[in-house]
Length: 322
Image (cartoon, rainbow, N blue to C red; front, top):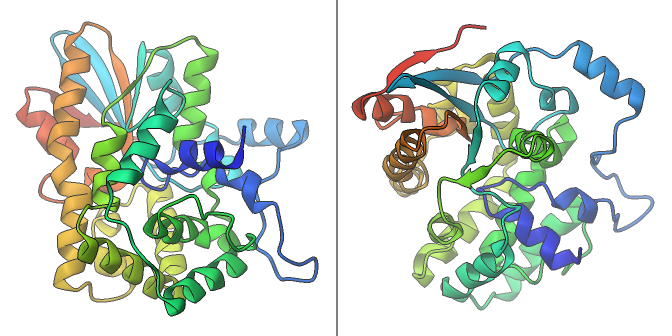
């Protein structure tokens, strides 16, 4: 698989960057202090992790029309031990017949849709300073400068943001979606997308030049202030405990005071997508086969949290106790 294919398959599901570790293995200098990269685990490591597997994150039962589906809150970075499902998630996997993800990155046509979505975004001509800032993030991530040049500049910055947690042991290679997708494929289970590539990337890559440049600069600002790394660390700790209160508090995650613009962007990124996602889950459930829907945990928080919306669509919703 070529580099662009790896990147495209990796980038769509809002920081589900499962394809980037292969790129990240290339260090800019043997002497450079590089963050650890995900490695294929040994048989001993796999056996140990499986034996110690426990439930993490948050899981809900969705009951309607005599069928039980499940909703699972994921996080798009992780640790090796997190990719082994605990007893309750394993039960949800085995007792359902369909896996629903935000985006199925293994679907035919994914690369084409990704490229088209990038082309619809507002083009940016980078200033010398902006290019230098992106190059500095490539150096920090131990990626060759220009390795992400096929991506829109805003997506380049978002990619570097997704890699910022590696120094704290949080790698996008260990995202739960990748584990669930692999499990579904091994079981010959159908996988459906709850969103389109275009609708997702339209939030990250708007066709308004002012908005997309604002996103580029905000992402770089947060990286340079180390806010991104801190937020990923806090998010990982809260996700592991199923702490929705912390996950739903943007100020706690970034240890900052989000501006009005940042809050509006978060609503577009999270709240405004939840209604269509809830309706798609309901549509798939109504087809007669119970499903396991895996969606980023931030979508389980706020006034338009997915569990609340699904209750409004007639589901009996109950959080699973671990």
